[in-house]
Length: 59
Image 1 (cartoon, rainbow, N blue to C red):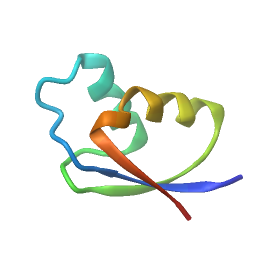
Image 2 (tube, one colour; image 1 turned 120 degrees about the vertical axis):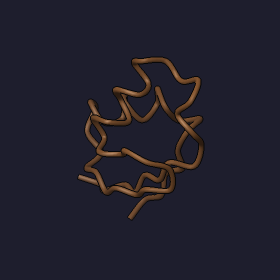
Image 3 (tube, one colour; image 1 turned 90 degrees about the vertical axis):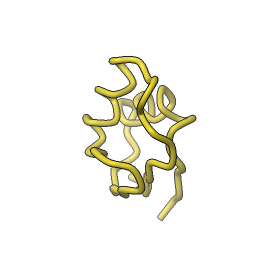
């Protein structure tokens, strides 16, 4: 499976509870933090919900 590097670039202030929960599920807890995740249908769905808060790079 492909790996992605996800970095939070915008604050989660003003985001919905569901979006904040998706960031936490991805392992992102603070601004400018990066995590590497496997691209699965579950993570793809979570990334789509917070796309406006993060940048995505393919590794």
